[in-house]
Image 1 (cartoon, rainbow, N blue to C red):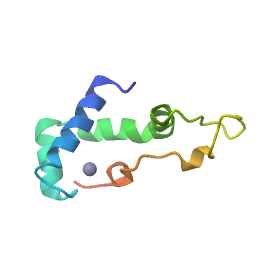
Image 2: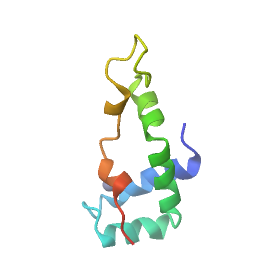
Image 3: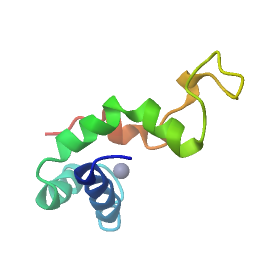
Image 4: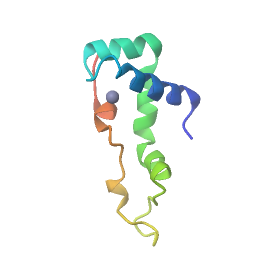
Length: 88
Ligand SMILES: [Zn+2]
C-alpha cells in the first residue's frame, strides 16, 4: 500500500476537484494549501505507478507470466494527467 502521506495527497487531490474540476493553477494552489509537499507525493505515485496499478487491478506486471492478461505497459493510472502535470 502507499505511504500515508501519499494516500492523504490522493484524497486531498480528489476533494479539491469538488471545487476545481480541472488542473488549473487555482486547483494546485488549493491542493498545496492542504498538502504543501504534494509534489513529493505525486512523484511517489509516478515512481510506483506500474506496481501500484497492477496491485489495484489484480494484474501481473510480468510479460512472461501466464496470469498476465495484458502486457505490463498497458497498466497505468486513468488519471495520467495528474502524474505528468507540471505546474508551478
Ligand atoms: Zn486530478
